Length: 199
Image (cartoon, rainbow, N blue to C red; front, side, top):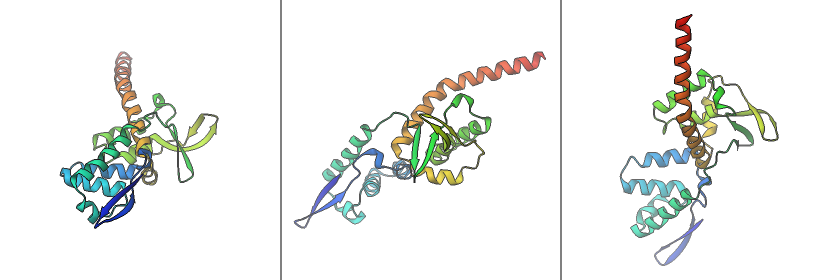
């Protein structure tokens, strides 16, 4: 999306994101960090991150113009596609969302739990690196992903290139599933403990 800014009687054109899909996970994490500051620093950081308008020019914008830009960004975010993207592509490599979360390993679950507990906003790339892994076999819409080995540092860096839209849809899906899965897991563990005591 293009924005025209007039300064000293001359209009200059700048680019602003045109869809929420254009925002990467790395940028989205910055937007979340900006929310911890003042409203003015959040506005400045958000516009700087999502456009090519120079920082010094953003500071000179009138408040009404800042409000218009931020409302356009907000509209884009509300129009995002919230359906889970089971397969994503980053730099030509295909990654698949864990195809069967009911068969998640204890190691995967422990890492996910740790990333959520230790501030999910700061650990989103790591969380996505657990949930999305390279596809090793694929036919039609069925795929197999790499086994989980806990080595996610490199993949977490790659996940920073995911779109915020993909991340948000995965988080919503995972959150909804987690609300169903945790009570089932607790019930299963209680039954297992009872069986162990009777033996």
